[in-house]
Amino acid sequence: MIKKLHKLFSSVKLTIFLFLFLAATSILGTIIQQGLSMERYKTLYSPGVFSALKFFNIFDMYHSWWFTTLLILLSINIIVCTFKQVPRIIRLISPEKKEFDDTVFKSSQIRKIFQSQKKLSDIERQAEIIVKSLVGPPVKTAKGDAIYFLAEKGKYSRLGMILVHISILLILAGGLIGTMLGFAGQMNIVEGEKSDTVALFGGKGPEKLGFDVRCDDFTVEFYETGMPKEYKTDLAIIDDGGKVTSGTMRVNHPFIYKDLKFCQATYGIAGVSDFLIGARNNKTGKEIVLKPDIMKKVPLPGSNASFAIARFVTDHGGMGPAVLGVLLEPGKAHDIFWIFQDGHNINQQQKGGFIFTLKDFSRLYYTGIQVSKDPGVFIVWIGFCLIMMGFMLSLFFTHKRIWLKISGSQDKYEISIAASVSKNRKAFEEKLEELTRETTVE
Image (cartoon, rainbow, N blue to C red):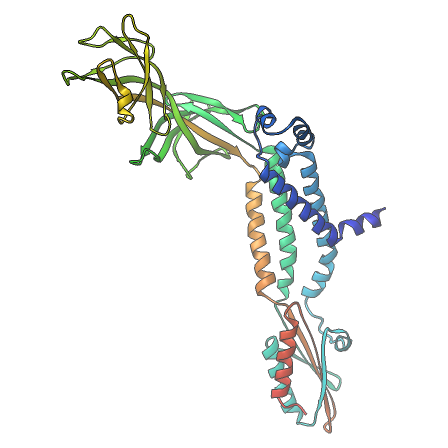
């Protein structure tokens, strides 16, 4: 059983299958939005589809038991494959033995034998040129009647594969640690108020931070079109019995505290007050400024009518802030109409002999803060650094070794060449053939 399991987990086919299956399920997790409420999913899918997706926990797929199992299986597969290759790589990068073994001239992937009747000194000089041009400066050794040249270069590039495998394991481990021990959610805090609770995404409930987060100030700048240009929050952390740590949070500029990342996610108007409503009399042309509160009527000077605000919206039909005004005249039905800040739909604002305009109001904002904790992110970063090193060693460096032996007598010398390269074998052989021709070894 152990041999069968070892054979299974050392299989490249298993690696390919797991990678493809993880890729397919990740696509599914991208198509189906993650972390929504169950009520929302019920409106998106039929009862049968909803039940099937819920059974396999597709709505929170990356935290499901089966997705975690796939990652663990892939990790085991990579570990077994790596350990299977380690002995061979250790042999390849180990220091070369001082004594030359002639079997290398029979077993190497690249071999070449030819004869020469030149002087031994000339042959040695040409042999050194060949070895140096192909690999690097050679080591020369004499053994019996034979002369050996050896050169090796780039042997540590063999470690590239191990580094890539280790980095993948670190990235997977960091992701699993972040999934199991981390969290992500959002908290909405009104200016001047504080909170210590994060509402986790996916309806998982609240998460207590153990300290208070206070919104000291929120500011937003707008373009002329009314679109927000920049918004930022001045935060204060109240921890350790009243100790305050403060900082500013902007979009794409998070605030970090105790391994927690606070990101500016959204904002909104939590409350409004101090409305200023302009009411211009159509007959006299005189404008007065009313200061009504919501659901509190105020009299209109020069008229027996009254005015009140029933409702406020931050954006009505894409035309910006607006209030729902109510004109109350004795003996008539209430006239209800929208009043816009910059005079949109001005004809609809002419009521009871007045033209109404929303001049200004005081806003009380809330800031929407996305809070996340990922204790595995440091491990993931180490994995990314190692994978870059591994790819650089594997792609830009080549392990090359060459052995050259000169044997024979003054009448005829035999030159034997053996070599091995980790990649680009064809180019190496072509260069070897060219060098042997150029040296005119006969």
